[in-house]
Amino acid sequence: MSEVLIIAEHDGARLNPSTARCVTCASQIEGARITIGLWGSGIAAIAAQAAALQGVARVLSFDAPGNAAPLAAVLAPQVAALAKAYTHVLAPSTTFGKDLLPRIAALLNLPALSDIMAVESPQRFRRPIYAGNAILTVEVDAPLVLATVRTASFQAAPAGGSAPVEAGEVSVAPPTHTRLVELAVTHSDRPDLQTARRVVSGGRALGSAEKFQSVVQDLADALGAAVGASRAAVDAGYAANDLQVGQTGKIIAPDLYIALGISGAIQHMTGIKDARTIVAINKDADAPIFEAADIGLVGDLFEIVPALRAAIQSRSRT
Ligand SMILES: Cc1cc2nc3c(=O)[nH]c(=O)nc-3n(C[C@H](O)[C@H](O)[C@H](O)COP(=O)(O)OP(=O)(O)OC[C@H]3O[C@@H](n4cnc5c(N)ncnc54)[C@H](O)[C@@H]3O)c2cc1C
Picture 1 (tube, rainbow, N blue to C red):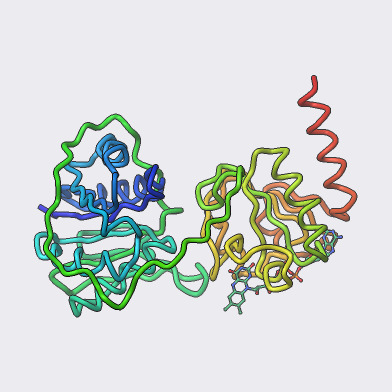
Picture 2: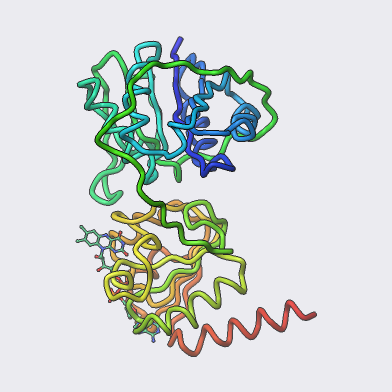
C-alpha cells in the first residue's frame, strides 16, 4: 500500500486544476491511497471540490487564519511534520509546487524529484531533461518520495467522488522570518495560461508591446483563449514575464496552440510538446516551428492575423 499525500493548490476560492492532474498521477502508483492536503483559511468549499475528485480517499483540511497565504515558509514545516505517515508527497510542477517541494525536502534531508511525467513503479519515475529531448528514468532510494508532477503529462481526474473531509492537525510554530507583505495579482478576464484549452502566443516578430496587445491579445480574445509569449517577446518587454511559455516559463497542454512569429526554438517547444494542435504563422518557411506544427501558414502575421480575425468575426455574426 502506498500512502500518497497531494498538496493542493488553490486561489482561496477554487481548487487549481493542477491538483486533479496530480490525482491521476498518484492513482498510477500501485496500491495508492490518496489523501489531498489542503492548507488555507475559510476553505470548506475548496475542500468539497477536492473531495469530489475520483480516486481521492480523503481530504485533510488545515483551515486556519495562519495558512491564508500559500507561503512555502509557512506550509513546508507543516507538511514535513506530517510526512512520515506517507510514502509519497506530491505537488504540481507549478510555481506553487516548485517553491514548496524543495523546501520540504530540505527540512527532511531527503532528495526531491521534479517533473514526473510517468510512473513506472512506486519508486521509479520518468522525467524529461534537456528541454524534453531526453527522458530520464529515476529510481528514488529513500523512504519517502517527494516529487513535483508535470501536470501537462496527466489528464485531470474527473469529478464524481465523495471522499470524507477531515480537519487536519499539525502543531508547528509559524515562522518568524517570513510573512506576506502584499499580493499583487493581475486581474484578467482571459483564461489562465496554464490551464486554458486555447492559447495564442506571440514572439519577437511582434516588434512592440502595442503590437503584441493589438495583434496577439485581440486574436486571443476573439477565440476565448489565454495569451502566451516566447522568451524573446518577454525579454523585449512586449509581454509580462508570467506569460512566458517554455523551458523556463510555463509548460502547457492546450487543445489548440497558435504561435505568431515564433521561430520554434527547442526551449520554447518543450513548453508546448503536449499541445494537441499547433498552428504556426511565420514568414520563414524554414522556421523550426513548422516541423512540430499541425497547421502551418507561411506569411506575414500582420496580414494573416487581421484576415483570420475578420473571418472569425464574420462567422460569429452568422
Ligand atoms: C536556458 C534557456 C532557456 C530558455 N527558455 C525559453 C523559454 O522558456 N521560452 C522561450 O520561448 N524561449 C526560451 N529561450 C530562448 C529561445 O532559445 C529563443 O531565443 C526564443 O524562444 C526565441 O523567441 P522567438 O521565437 O520569439 O524569436 P526569434 O527566434 O527571433 O524568432 C522570431 C520569428 O518570427 C518570424 N517573423 C518575423 N517577422 C515576422 C512576421 N512579420 N510575420 C511572421 N513571422 C515573422 C521569424 O521568421 C522568426 O522565425 C531559452 C533560452 C535558453 C538559453
